[in-house]
Length: 115
Length: 114
Image (tube, rainbow over all chains, first blue to last red; front, side):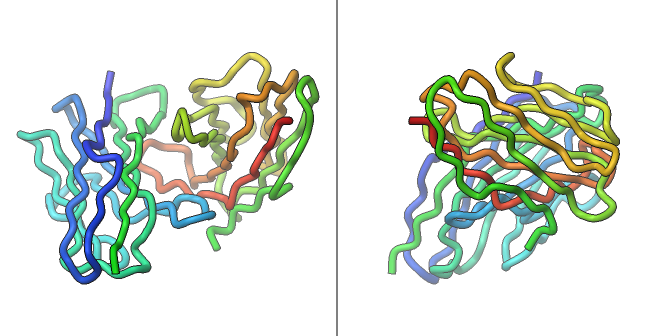
């Protein structure tokens, strides 16, 4: 069964610095990959997703992620963070052949922006 | 605004009680998901419905039940409440309930069990 590991529970970074949030999944079979963001006191919203095609996926708010099949990773990056990026970020994976229709969610990474 | 509505926003109740959380999906979405988010357990998938039928089940306790009605709104019923049920409960919806779908989340219902 698939599993998702977000290696860092918290990532502190200075404003305007680059950031990478790491996500690894367990199986190298075909996967769909997602990053969702949860701003304080809000529900989650989709940042970006990979279904097929180009391995570099661009999302909202200047974020992008790269699908690396050999390393079973889908790390999220932003070249310059802003205070408004303070949020919790969730990586999720699904198996296109899974009849259970489930997304498998990571534990989340809190991005803390230092002024 | 995701287009998903949840009521109530906050709910405070006592142990042993029963509550009902309500969710209206985005217009046109046929599938509804329920999640529980707590500090100790993180985000947990509970259950998914598609067009009125249960499609997937996650870590949902037997004390919890849900249904999706013909108008596609959904209710999550929590009974015999325990202190540990205190959490944020999110509803999400998607167009077709597929694993490739984007899920649109509501603002959540914060349940406090005293």
